[in-house]
Amino acid sequence: MLRAIIGTAAVLAGFGVLERSVDASTGYAGSCTATQAYALLQRGEMVSVRAEPTPQASVIGTLSGRTAKGDLARGEVTIMGSQSGWARIALNTAPGYAAAAAGAGSQSFGWVPADLLTVDARVDGAITVYDRPGLLGSAVATIEGDDMKFRVLGCRGSWLQVVNARHGNVWIDKWCAREEGCRG
Image 1 (spheres, rainbow, N blue to C red):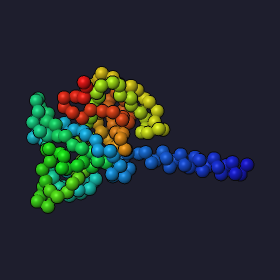
Image 2 (tube, rainbow, N blue to C red; image 1 turned 180 degrees about the horizontal axis):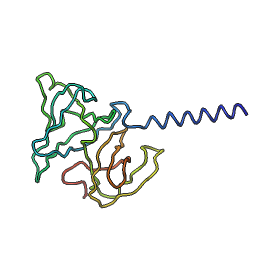
Image 3 (tube, rainbow, N blue to C red; image 1 turned 30 degrees about the horizontal axis):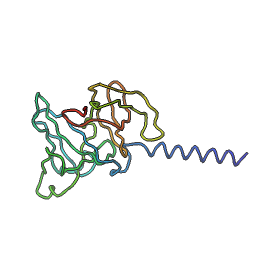
Image 4 (cartoon, one colour; image 1 turned 60 degrees about the vertical axis):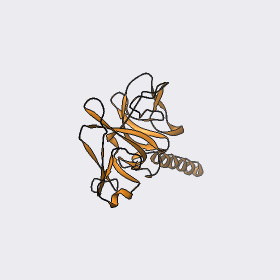
């Protein structure tokens, strides 16, 4: 009887560790597959790119949107990881990035608030949204044909943790980050 209780406690403890290990906001900073996303910025607006994932970290440059139709400008980035609500972005692939100082140009990545980044549902086929990433995730809903946008919260492997008005805080493994959409 005592062995059964100890065994059950060990299994439950294992699930508790597994549950915590899939949290995107506390994951290892390099835990993402390279992922495209974009920031919709007001014309002339710039986002500070920081050396570390904290508002107190030094600013190493700025990200601005390129000129687009309408009032908004898009700043396209490649997300490499996430930590504590911040997205680690590759600076060498960010067309709107400008280094703050001569020495800051040598950095290959920087940090921006993750919720400034967006992806959307303009893809071929359906997008299934999940309550968590990976094999333990349960399908929450299926989206097809919508021009729905998702705010990025974090990432884990090939999954994005996103939020939107209809489905709240969910995980997706299929999205679009191109201005012209990803259909056809």
